[in-house]
Length: 163
Image 1 (tube, rainbow, N blue to C red):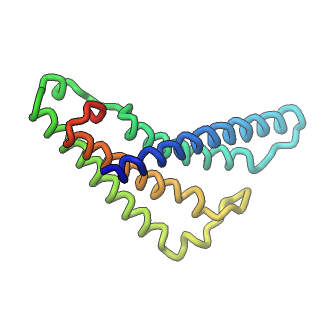
Image 2: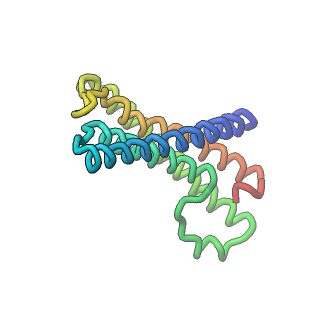
Image 3: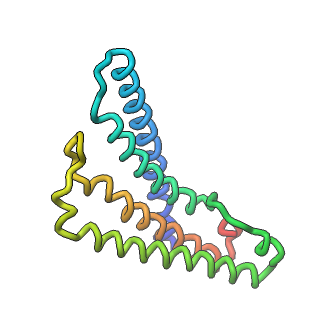
């Protein structure tokens, strides 16, 4: 339990740093793209691609962070009427569903990235190996799995922060 919680906290710290870096990278890339296109009349062909890949990574990392902090969208009308053990069991079932979904997507994405044609794909303008943007999926779903497992363990230990 302590190991999973510590791992979840470490991964959350890494996610925060990655989110900051990706936001800055996206801002700089788009700003340079606009500056070069409209002020120097010489568009950069890599700035849009950099921003798109940064946004893809940021989206998946942000999704993982929202699971950790329990800030994801939810309809709680039904859950708000529950209390005690029933509520704890239903929360556990919902967290278990998230964990199973995350593990399934992680498995599928690893299988997808293991295919031979992924390794030869390159992006159009930067010629970046496409494995780099594609890795956002398994990495984020691995993080989601760890965060979900941590929340499940907290829920069944009765810690208030998991509810």
